[in-house]
Length: 263
Length: 171
Image (cartoon, rainbow over all chains, first blue to last red):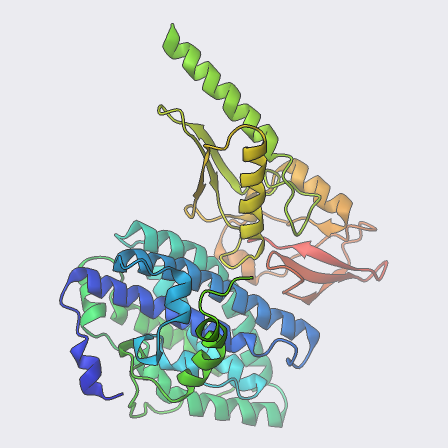
């Protein structure tokens, strides 16, 4: 996937911009939910296993609401299932951070905490959206996200300010995932259109609050914030790391092999 | 006056449907009806004669939502309301404050501690909640996990009687 191909899908109509925006939110929740689902039966303790599964359930629920809306905006008779199971990687617009592998528990927590903090800003802003449907979905999702953030930020502090080993491992996860955060609040023409039409808050407003929140959590967790890093991926534009293909292969296998299968 | 009669007729039908829905159990906590849970948002007979039933999900991903929709459909069909329209209501989002007083009593009697406080502000999330043990009534309880067997519950243990129990979260 080249950046030239991504630029070719530049939205020309307002409807396309809204569709693209809704898919970014939906796909980020869907892919992160699918990743968390990989932990089921493998988490360090039963309680955390249940916790991660609960988060996954909320995220997939949010994705369903958003994908159903995306299907209506698109108007091509694709429902939530068609959009989840029958699109290929370049047609997914999730943050590249969401598709990064689970790694150890600390890596999963850092990924979760970074995205929870992002969703707090995005859903918080969308509550005042001029788009009533998005405002309703965001108000519901925000309540869930607050619980997710409490879980992930709580673990970030326990691991960061824990043993020498947990500190070292969680700092490594922060360092490794940091390059994917550049995308979180970098506006492109879709984000600008959403801000200009009052559908979403300008990303710059959320960026400052996100940054302050992340700094405070890192300080509490005795972790350090890495320097900004060059960033070659643009998940929001359909340019992904190689990991997304593997996530989709597992998630879509059944529907691709037995089209229309129900149970 | 035919108009008044019509209103009276629709009010009676709405009341009948509320009573019917009060018999539909929540699939995950069957001691509670969906009315106890506060997820039936409206029962309305419009001027066109069509009955509209609005249901809201508790959590976005709650797996019970689809089972509930099927049960409501079946209950309406069986009682002569097969033309009723089921509507999903997303706004305002469901809150545990909508549990009815009867629902709270049923939860406690079933061994699930009902939500301790109203969801006044997001700040209440960060305060430690004192939860009463539904078995012995002790306030000496501790949270084992914020997440339980369903999205709406957390896992607690009583320090007095040592029994583990579920707590219905403030949400």
